[in-house]
Amino acid sequence: MIELIGVHKRFGEQVVLDGVDFDVREGETVALLGASGSGKSVLLKHINGLIHPDAGQVIVDGQNVVTIGRKNLARLRTQIGYVFQNGALFDSMDVFENIRLGLSDETQYTDAEFSQDRVTECLRLVNLPPETAKKFPAELSGGMRKRVGIARAIAGRPKYLLYDEPTSGLDPVNADIIDQLVKQLDNELGVTSVMVTHDVRGAFRVADRLALLSEGTMALQGTQEEFLQSDNPRVREFLERDFHTAPVAA
Amino acid sequence: MEGPARVGGTIGAATGETGCDAHWAGWTSVSWGSTILPMNAVLVFPRFIGRAVLGGFTQLGRFSLLTFEIIRGLREWRIWLPRTITEMASVGMGSLFIVILIASFTGAVTAFQAGYQWQTSLPLYVLGTLIVSNIVLELGPVLVGLVLAGRIGARYAAELGTMRVTEQIDALDSLGRSPASHLIIPRVITGFVMLPVLTILADLVAILVGWYSVKQVLPITDADFIYGAQYYYRPFDGYYSIIKAFFFGGAITLISCYTGFNTKQGAEGVGRAVTAAVVASMVIILVLNATLARVLLN
Image (cartoon, rainbow over all chains, first blue to last red):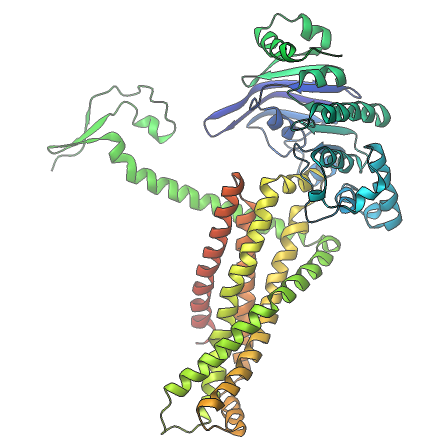
């Protein structure tokens, strides 16, 4: 379970998170919605300790990320796969080495046969051919880079998966493919996922529950029905803006 | 003379500023004798000093943290050792041409200048002493250090800076892996090891070229040159050259890794980090050069 309690974060004078409460139950997928610059990625980075809150608690798997200590945090991070917005692939390494780095167990990492099999398996899970392993990130399309980023995140068999805008910058066809992939991985791997996005259609298609971050606070966290029936003006404004351009296909 | 007096405003009025500024809230101007200065102008200098001091301590704190990370990461030798060997090979092979080029010209110029300044009252073998001492004690390590500050310093700052702004360092962190043992330690050890190695090479090349060159301008024999080179030479001269290179290598790689690792704000930030790494490395080399001369040669 992931739980954020009263999280505050500011950068200089700018308050990004102002007492945010957020929770994700075991095995569910939560889409974290919000406009650009609303602090969604900042919130996600709190979950695996890449950013520490000024105040509040971040509990992951029963451990407080803020006070856990360096060694335990590194251990916890092996349980949390993180898919970065732009892939964040190591551009000096080929796809094989990128995914292999995701193997958290050092014995598995140094076992050539195991790592070869695991990389191939991860590529299959993200619907990429085994030949992709020999390519470098610069040789991949945007959609492929995102999928390799996902493959790296799942290589260590994490319990939690955090997606930072996995469909941003992709055309609608590729965005749909990534959405389907997220859903497929959730089903096949049984992970607990948080997906940061501003794509309402994708969020409704993939998530069990949704959360809307607005003006530094959590405007609403609930099921799809609760979102659609909400009278909260911030929720209405966000949904209607997107619904006008593309109807929801849940 | 009268002291400053408050003019206008109300103490405690909200100005939107924080900390020390809050104390001055409401002070719109200060009178000093017959001169009335706006409050902002009065605070410019103290603010500048305060920010500079805080900035300095912030940098020092960050540098200390990085150093602790490096020391802590040394235990993970299985990770950094293979990367260090690769990095050493890359820096060594990549710097070979420029080091030999610089050493050759340094040796030649030292010989030609010695020939130009030559006094016929001195025995010719002194030229061997002059050329070898100049190269080993000063020119070899310093020139190699300055050139590699540009070459390696810029490269490391740019590599790590780009990795920082493209979230590759965050990605390593998120995989539970230590950026220090994957990225910093291999580079820093490479600096500590390869600068001395390249300096030994540079010293040898510069001496050989200087030997050949001085024979072109003065009637010195090989026996004279070798005699002069050995006459005043002490083994410590060679150690001193290597010790200097060792410190220069460590300084270049630590500074460039630190600036690259703490890069902010995209491509512009990477550019700033590279400039800062090269300038700071060169300045530190000159400071270390003077310090080591004072400490080790006295």
